[in-house]
Length: 238
Length: 336
Image 1 (cartoon, chains in turn green, yellow):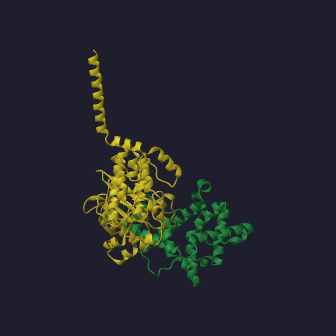
Image 2 (cartoon, each protein chain N blue to C red):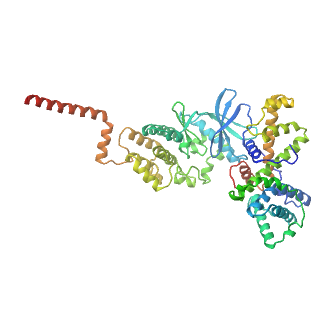
């Protein structure tokens, strides 16, 4: 997949001189990163759910207040590594100073649905898994969630809801065992089986492109983009 | 799809596979993954036009660099230039709808050499297979191509007993041979990139020391072949481990041990200087002839000659025994 040379990643937009562009980019970054950060605070810093949620909110309040993402220098480390280092630093300081009330000042800037993340943090995660692996797992999940949201937005704009439904039924929700056939889907939605084949192929192609575009958005350089794409597809677990 | 999508681990795994999986192609119906190399993933595929199964190697990187894109084309061209029964033929190259490059090759039905060797096989059968590997590699060398990643996993045994050397993704091509492969400047620019940049290529245990610095000539393949020979003789992957060599020494005839040791010399100047010389020594061993790598004692010479002329020796001994028996019998008759 090739990207236009004018493509500006979220990372670069988070460093924009325009406060509005910067704020929107920071919001978008926060939407991708809150779940991995929450899991990281829970496991690496051994925080209870309520404290981890509070610290996650506090980190983003602090990051926005200090324009933290604007300080990222792509050549020095991956953005993911930079974020984790900042979180570690923030949490250590916050815990040391016991400034819990001041972290977010009770402010809620992100709609954190920690229940789902909690459901995924198993006993094995805490006992056996490297917190980095859990962070990577949650980051990958966030990338796919973001890509699906973008796909949905574009397909709804172009009135291709049925494409989305087929994609959801066949490729996302169904496991190998309970997957409907193309013929079953065609009969259910009153379309030809060849149409199911073609629409699914087109949606998969678009989804792949959007996933890569999302990773591109979350990367500070071409090299990081390539590495993150490999990492997302399981080439290398961090 | 709901507004707030929640993805289970299973759904994430499915999406990951979906993104990684090659899209449908007009001509080739991509099936199951059957192999994986450093640069590409090999899938079983069906060629709809010719109605036959083929193997399709697709560039692995989701966002390939120009260099990676050129390397897979280069690998296909190297394979296409090596027309030999021991080297898998290439049928086609192309680009998938998502921009990933691929090439199509013969689908070899058979068994990998490492799996084959682990089953009950005689030493002479394995050595004769090894000679076929040597033959293919020597042919490539004659064409100016050095494989640089020879190991049992990269050798397939076909259903008709043919031996095929696979995965030429990190092969090095001599400049004069590359001219034959060049179709445009971009491919030429990628030529030997892994070498000139000093990147190590190969597999530990099978990789000659000089490959650590990205260098090496045909003799790195002699080292790799020695690793394969070691594996065939011991069923163990070679490591830079003295204990392993000691154990191996205990169980092998001295000439084979010497062949292995010469081919695996750390100093390229001390190795066989060509694959043909290694193959000659292995052939000589099989034919009970002296091998260049080993200086025989008188006892070893006699034993080898006895082994080589076993039938004649048995006949002579039988004849002599018969004569002795007749003499004894005749003497007994006279005494009576």
